[in-house]
Image (cartoon, rainbow, N blue to C red; front, side, top):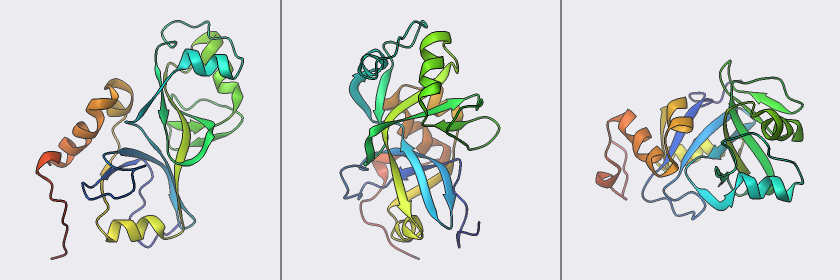
Length: 188
């Protein structure tokens, strides 16, 4: 699983101010998997104009558990935007789950939505449509071009903060003020 550089599984990618791709400008992306085959993540600070209540209606599942109906659905990235992905803790045991570590997992199977709707488990979820994906070496190339800053992920940022505060909180973990970042990057 040598990526030729640091493994960024369970890290945040912070889009630099010069990010030209509108899908990723001013985003905070959680990396759920990074290997020599590529990387997979979810943008965690871009809510869509859709709530979980609306999503559950569209997929024809009951949402009986309290506290979920008004939660936003997120734009997770430009890949497979018609498919849902659930970032959650605890990791649990679902049909199609990528266990990031003992605390957090990414699930794309319907059974987790059924559980959320009926029993409210898992309680801490971020549900997105689409994901961000990189082919082998692509993320490393973007990092070399100064497109991203990286920082170890903090589950409190994902699950405890509103989306508009997540990017700033991740930047603060680096001791950097986003407003002071230059759009021009260089190499020493």
